[in-house]
Amino acid sequence: MVAMLHAATAGVVVPAASRSRGVARRTPVSGGAPDANVKRHGARLGHGRTGLGPRHVCGGARGGDRVAAVNGAGGALEARRSCEPKRTRRVRADAAAADAGSSDSGIVKPKVSMGKLQLRIASGVTLAMAGLGAIIFGGWIWAIVMTLTATLSAREYFQMIDTMPSELPHPPPKWALDMSIVMCALFIPVVYLAGAKQGHITMAVLGAFATVGLRLIQVESEPHFSKFTSTLFGIIYCGALPAFWVKLRMLNFSAASTAIYQSLQSSRSAFVNSWPSALGGPEAWTTGLIVTVICVACIIASDVGAYAFGKTFGKHRLIAVSPNKTVEGALGGLTCTMATAYGLRWLLGWHAGPVQTLVLGAVIFIAAVAGDLMESVMKRNAGMKDSGDIIPGHGGFLDRFDSYMFTGIAAYFYVVTVMPHWFLGMTL
Image (cartoon, rainbow, N blue to C red; front, top):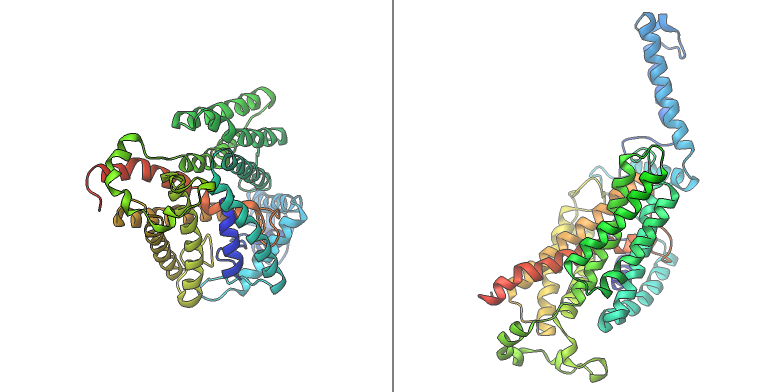
């Protein structure tokens, strides 16, 4: 629910959704079109006839085998499509219609009604207030919120991989999906109780995957490799990655680094110095709290900036996976992200240098876009417009939290591994 702040801003500033909420352009056609294509190709091979015998196509038995293979492939694909849920088939049809109505540049501009916009605003503001409170208080409250985040994300992820008949023909069985969701739900509490060390996260991933994997080998008569890979990715994506938001919030200056910066304490901002003692006073603004606030604000700025610049100047599509993203929007989002990071550095009196802070903003932007595109790929493969409908007016939880998935771990390792070299040497 670091995505709560994102949800509020997305509702107010982004009436058309700053990211793609539809399925991008797909090469396969939907519904019964594959079978129609097969018949059409068969007719062309048979000089205007369909269902011809071996003598009419390419001559001999080989011609009959080719027609049977083509018709069989089309029938299998049609049968597989017909077994999909009605919602999946409907979204595929909507995607085809969106492709047909897109502009020559390939940029799709979704629309949202005024009633849905008001619903987005109401739910977004509610979630934002709860998310901001959890970030400020930290500790167990933040761990519980991130546990809920991991659980809802895992639920939607494993629902999506269960609806990918073409890309994932052998998904894990339902009991394995449920077990993986439970593992993701237990991931953060276990890591938090153990002290949120790096090794604890690694051991938690290995333990969770070993539990599900060994059970798959024991129960499944013919286990497929895709069942193991999709399960492992889900445990990392929905369990380990959210855990780094907990680690990021727990960051604090060590005794040595505090001594180094004792001479800089006077540079703290008036905002931090006036922080009420009931909320911990100025000492509450540790490195972890400052960086977490910067990360969330930068993700929001990235989304809003990309939408505003893309809406105003966007002409060149950025990537085919997400048709409404433009190069101009990406540049605008990067600019707004770096500006937000720099502004919060000044507001919160953070002791990082200007160059360090601007680079942090760029890292956050790249990680946010990567997370957004990753979920777009999953939704395309699943034939889904939204990952769910748990958030009124916004869709699924992953639809709001996708940009945060890779941001926590990216910001954590940047602050922990890159910035100390600047801290102990020269502050740029």
